[in-house]
Amino acid sequence: MTVRNLIQSIEKNAPRAYSEEWDNVGLLIGNEDSTVTGVLIALELTEAVMQEAIDGNFNFIITHHPLIFSGIKKINSSDSTGRIIQKAITHCIAVYTAHTNLDNAPDGVNHILANKIGLKETVVLSPQPHQSSKLITFVPVEYAQKIREAIFATGAGCIGNYDFCSFSVEGEGTFRANNHAHPFAGETGKYHIEKERRIETVFPSYLSKQVVAALFSAHPYEEPAYDLYKLENINGKIGSGVIGSLPEPMDEKDFLLKLKYTLNIPVLRHSDFIGKPIKKVALCGGAGSFLIRSALEQKADVFITADIKYHDFFIPDKKMLLVDAGHYETEQFSTELLQYILNQNFSNFAAQISVHNTNAVNYLI
Image (cartoon, rainbow, N blue to C red):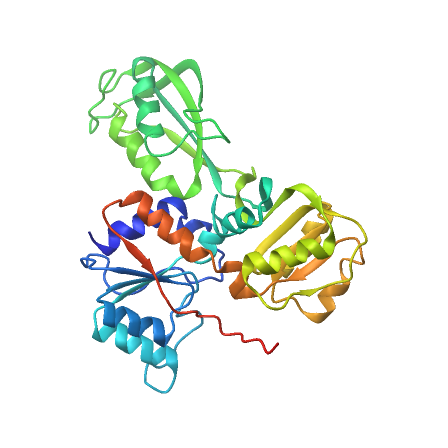
């Protein structure tokens, strides 16, 4: 088992292409070809977590929040980041981060939080645009199915709850091969008309290289003709936040008490009560203030997130309950999610969640 194998299993669920431009995800320290002796998962990589990895012979640490986020000009023992990096290198411990790609992924961080709260009929609150592309290619009629199967095998052709989706129409392709060509059909120097099928299918944009490689591998022509288009279509399964419904409406205070219990948090900050039961719930783990207006527009009764600024509590204007449930608290289940992904892909390989509480915020009650 290598670092590369484990990264591939995570990024099959949460491709790096789903991350935000400002983020720093992926392998931050180490070699993808290293053999893994043990995996330790944590929300943050603290010095305590690093020592736990060293003591437990874990040589691969996976975190949700990146250890290296903004630029680093020096690595020394003057701060915790420098000390952690030094120990990782000294003890040959690889460090990988799945951050906003895991947030934005289908069944990602926000979805597991929604499940913990008990939401039903959940959808993405703010779908991420420009994540889909279209392939159009032209093939001899008798090769059409072979080409479809090769392209579908890469993950292309999925629309919502359907796969193997494509469209084709029959027509005529024309070409003339020059003296340097080795034509599959027709003769060198002669104008040729070939019965062809135009095949169209969609795919996640991050699969572009794999889709084109599969096309070239299966296509009989020496020079396959194809077009790639970036689509404006919204992928409803990828994006920020989640919105769904409680099985039954709840009193506002009762809902907040349930949320406190579920997240094991001593304090909740919230806006004015709205004076009606809570049924429609929107949420975004971590710093999600940028989604307050989206939650309002979709008529959520409550929006749960973290790191809310003082003046943002005025935005709902008593039309929606706004709740700051803490950054760590709303993302704490990301470790469970990462462990689940690895266990699903490697049933004979155990990944362990760190025993340390890495929350940087303390509460005096």
